[in-house]
Each structure stands twice: as structure tokens, then as C-alpha cells.
Image (cartoon, rainbow, N blue to C red; front, side, top):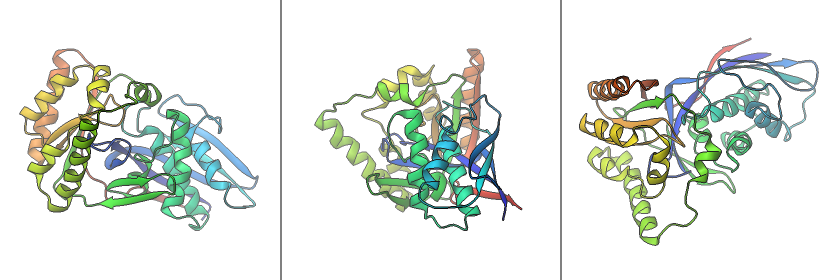
Length: 309
């Protein structure tokens, strides 16, 4: 194999009750990444389509993640990367993670897969650190492993794949503004009252239980953010109203996707999902707020190989 094209999907993280540790892989938004072997050693980003991003391998997350991966292996050829962005940077559904994870996954395939999923997560985190200023694996883990994941540790990478109820769907609506992850992380309080921490821990534990039992009433009570959402929601136009509309329309839960501005809702019924999306988008249209919205099943397999040569 000399060339491979992959679809690297988007993701939502935190899921309100699991800041920096919970992530969910989306099905129908993502980047297409083609990686080809070259005779000359090194990494080249040949093209980036869709959004204006640098091709500098030291400033583009795909190049940064690829370099991190290749430090751990000796090869006598190089790699050329082509990126077709399907996720807007700064949208809160894992744009940088999709590029980072998709690139290292593709390179690993061309190397005959010497690296494990955990190795790929570790390398991808270098791209995440570049754009956010800190290491976190909540976006890249579900993209690489698929489904819903919990990051237990980033010291020695430890990721748990959780059950994905078949009926569970995600509704994503993004007001057309950009919130940089690094900026969004600045509004997060450094100190939290012990009472809030206790409640958030209870929410996280009961959410995980709801995935195993498919108890959507419990899920509704669990996907609640006691700590981050009150501050971050101020950065997102109409967040409180969208949350009310979504819940009134039958959503199991509503919250901020990643660092925002995308807002996620959960549903276990397709007609309810479409109703939620329709009602939210109608609200934005009345206010002349530009937006993007879609419904997605949970992608349980992660990155998909589209073509090999």
C-alpha cells in the first residue's frame, strides 16, 4: 500500500458531566485525509481544502501529530498529506482532533500498523495541545476507538470504551461563530467547591450506568454540567433559549459540545431528533442568526478507510 484515504469523523466531548474525559464519535461530519508515501524522508502537507489553514507542518495539527508518531519508528521514506476539511475549525465538534487522529491513523496503516490505538491517541494529543495549550484526549479517543469513550488517564494513556445505545442520536446545532478552544478554556474556573465536585462526580457515574442499562430517564438527570456550562454558555448566542426549546421538544439532555459554540442535544427517537432540529433552526432563522445543524447516530467504529492504492 502506497496511499490511503480515510474519513476522520467529528466528535462531541464533555457530554456536560465529564469535562475532558468523555467523548462521542459522530457519523456524518468529518475530514477526508489522504496520505501517500514519498521517496524523500519527512512530512509534507500538500494541500488543505475547505478552510484556510496553514500547510506548515509545525503549525498544522496534522503535521504536528504525524511528527510525534514518526519519532517512535525509523522509516526510509516520507509522507505527503492532503486534507479536505469537513469540520469548521473552532466549531466545538473536534476539527483539530479529526485532522490529527485521521493523519496518524492513515500513516499507521501505511506502516502496516505497528502502533496501537493508545499510541495513536498519544501522538494525536500533540496536535490538541498545540491548539488548546493543554493535553487532552477526549476528542481523539472516540475518533480512533469509536463510540463513546472515557479517558481514565493521560499520564499513561488509559481509555475505556463505553456502551453506545443503538437508539441514541445526537442533534448538533452550531451558530456560525468561532470559539477557539484555548480561549474557551480560559473561562473555566481553576477552583471548584467540593459540593459541586461531588454532584458532578455523581452525574458522571450515573451517566455511565445509564449507558449500560439504556435508562434514558437516568441519562436525562445525569447529563448536567454543574461546573463549566454556567461560564461557557455566556460565549454562545441564545444558548439558554436553545436549551429550553430543545428540552421542550423532547430532548433527553442538552449541553455545550466541547468548547462550543456547537450545542448538542440527545434523543432516542428519530422523529423527536428531527423535531428538535427543526425547532432550534426555526428559532435561529427568526433571529437571522447563521447556523449549521444536523442529526447524527453514534459512530461505533471511528475512522473509516475509503480507498487504498
